[in-house]
Image (cartoon, rainbow, N blue to C red; front, side):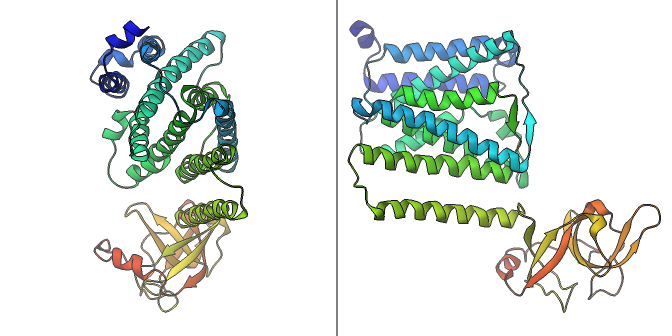
Length: 398
């Protein structure tokens, strides 16, 4: 073994070699540079074998020592398993709120065996490489180095092809909010387990999550705001909790009410912040909307914020001030319902209180987003200033 270790040279060489091997896997799996890498045989057989080759390479390296002393390694492993189970439970709760879907994977004997081989190869290779890179560094910049390593390993899960095809705007925000940031948060937590306990807790945490993804017949089908919340904040909360519990177990921190209150305070603040974000993007039955024109004066002025209660189009009543989506100009319009045409297909006739004529197009029930239940004067002025450079579409009075 010592001869093999000496063959691989110094620590810097081993790091460079390992990063190069992982980078090769990222290029093979996430780009179009190697056409055959997208074939089924490569994905399910060659790729796991290559990851197992990386794991074997790390096994031949000299051992690295994680931070936790040997007597606490089992505690860290138990925390990793518990964290994975709690994470899955929260994901399922999120799915119950926004929706559940059937797994896209097959569950026959052959398919399950292939998936198991894929998970085992991928987990062993990724976590062996992660553990070595994290624990071979012994400098004073541990936090940024671990964060950088975590970011690097995000790309073992995500496809660079998807990122290249993204356009600026909502699609980009949804991808980063619902996919990239959750993957980074999960990678950070996995790296922290590797930092504390080495390969085993990191592989246990990551492997359980992958096994759930591949072997559960029902998976959460969540909206991107829900993915952002659960995928980012649950791993961050878990990291803080694991750190706190490890410090207590290692007697690096006294059990004081002040420390517990501080942790609870961070938790409460984060949950409140996320709830505000959810409220702003429309997760709840009531959501805010900034008014940018004066078509509804004097009831609603530019810069006011209206609270809109979600409802179906057939629930609208004459005189309601509704918000509806205009598909051609792709904006939300807030106007009053002045007539309801119930002959044939239902249609709503709308008009701004300050406009001289009715809106050109009748509003179909499926366009209705909700009705205004409250006006908050001048609350949206800051947003209005930010939008001041955006012109109102020609011919539109909303």
